[in-house]
Length: 490
Image (cartoon, rainbow, N blue to C red):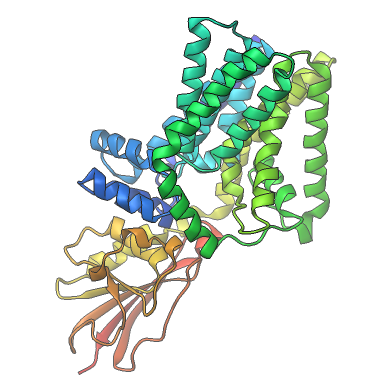
């Protein structure tokens, strides 16, 4: 096992080096640009107000702002923040797996395979709140498990429950999907302590404290919730949603049910078998926290999505560690040492090559996205030129890359939906018409997208197109960025 751990460590070092090397390879996109621009407000009160106009809680942006004040707001710095907390999440996964199973090797491989998981790596390389929320949920889970093992009354128990309340509240303040983790924690505590009413009461204080700490943000959350219920972009849940998400969590890739239904079902069956095998092979009562945490977000988001769809694959990144720990624990429970070692080696090899294989098939060198589009536009821009983005989903990304003194406009003949980033828009950013944005004889540059948020209105008849160039982005749903140069007719 010692040689395998060394080999596994070397593999992870290669995967980490690959991540660092490719940290800025993929162009920044709309959600990341929202993060980057939001933290530039000098006034904390203004920043919090803008956050309240969006659909997410504030803690990620507040901590990212502190990070950027120390390390700058370059794309490398912003994504390094996510990678840093992804690595802390690995450490928390190790601590949690060891706390549950009391096996250092099992904990070591759980943490390592999580860090090499292709689905996880995607969010190591994105300037959003996913790895931070994952870390806080792992931390809360660890403190809960440790607290449930501790005798009462004692200062140590009180400290652990207080730490649980803080980390649970921090998770809620980072992403609202964390509520499913707290619900799973509560159900698990009820299951484990159903005959220990006194201790259950003490543990309940931790849950209540997490809720109390969230109360200051509750009015803002309710306003955000009303926005989401009025209109949101997430597609309706269907019978393939959950199986497809599980296949993404294990392989890092999405399969089309019309083409790979058998494979998706097979992965789901193997995951179910791993949970049942793990539960049957280990005596620790704490092992039950894993299925509670894995199943609750699927059940909760499914039920809520019957009214307004909130089900999105990437939100399940918060619950990937519990699946990984379960799968590794299932492998460690295999009685035949040769078979066990072989399967662990295969799991390591699969995790090591998964993300590099995915990215190599994307041909990233041919897909510069907004980074390439901005460079192309700015290299020919003159001070009197006008820049018009026809979709807010490329407007903010250009705003991030824009190094010129020209302030771009976003074309919005009618009100934009709140989920398009309107929290960051001012009146002077918006062009209601394209007719009078520039004087005759001047140049207008337009920025369009063929991906999500695609809106390419026909230009006025007086505009003469001089240039057009397309810049594909890495992911299919982002499409391509199209830059066009027009001369306004006299």
